[in-house]
Image 1 (tube, rainbow, N blue to C red):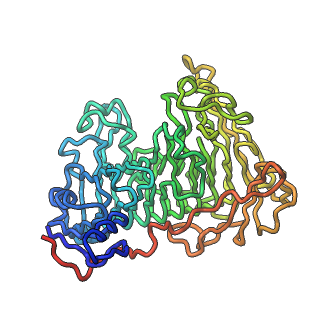
Image 2 (cartoon, rainbow, N blue to C red):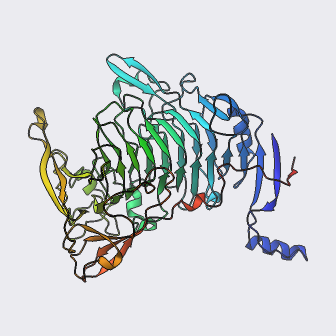
Image 3 (cartoon, rainbow, N blue to C red):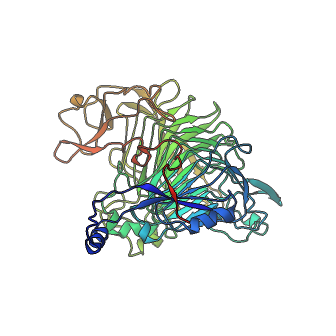
Length: 559
């Protein structure tokens, strides 16, 4: 292992060197962060772990090209960069890591990389770049049940304002293991945490997963755990900020079976933004799927997602597949300018649970404000935000022929503590115009305690547009086209871009003409309030960096 210190300093602060005392005082006031580059001897787990253990915050670990099997987790407690020699060309070229976790009897929730930094890492970037990880998806039979195993990629948890980036990697044969009792007795490593079997399980951290190729059954999870709903740190959380997990500019290929899991889920106070991805479901066996959801509150107690966003994604599907771009089950959600390659697709809002007694009896949640769906029930945040979907705006999502995607509204089953149907133009809004409405799904379970259980879905199909008058729904156009009068909650997307299509260059990986606009929402005084703008694209953590970090020049040996 070779350890070198760069001569250029990351943060430059003026320190007087006239006398030692002045120097010390100055350095106490202004911490200087030096980038140290550490060359791992090889790509083996032992050599990489040795290099990581010798690193400090802000250091860069260079992992050389090679083919290496990892049979256990790489543990990291400092905000550092792991930089491989390339993600393409494996096994002949690049840094190629393959899982042998199953052969080593590792649990199904044991990841390639565990990042759990100390508080001293706050403000420093953790990064993984230019590597390939093969999660070694594997199936076997337990009776008539097909069981599966694959190594998760990253478990990361940290502190508020701890940033991270995962970019320019290849992750292949990834899979979220099913929580199936029939498989438990033959599952390597024994009992595991099902939530943490997701390939990417991110808690509290905020940052970006970008410019990767992820194949198999990609699954992202983001959480802040249920207690976040009562913490002042997140009071007033809303869409359009940097306080999210961003999934952007990736190629996501879902082709491993059996799997009905979504690409990503935020729950327990988590929030994810999916933008400008190519999402390929053509190799996915089920004829129905949904790309992502924001989970709702339910028994456990399980707290809901804070919310999420999905825009500018290209959904690549077969003609026989139906799907939802997003299922808004909890929190604040914005879904717009996504494009399907088929004549199918939709967006769904859904109440997953009612005024559940497990949640209602918990003192960690506040009573919901008057006028909300569960007014007076203790399932809201201390700042008044509701855990069921609220401030959900859905507009200009298109099929291949530029027809609007369908929109649906689902009320969960009676046994789920009687959830209520979300109220259009109160909890959620869609494109202004004339829509056809039909009950597309009604499930009656016939046995036992579920004998009278009904879950109902109402589907809306766009028929015709008219002049937006501000009375309901969402309008779109130049900012000057906003009506002078409006109903509180109604939206208007102010933009100079198309309102009747999602043109090429505005969706999919690396858009040449990113989506631009501001969502205005009508206030209580019949006034338009600028309420949402998509967060800076590309994500600022990507700015000023080449695809590959070059080794520093002008360094000197440190030992």
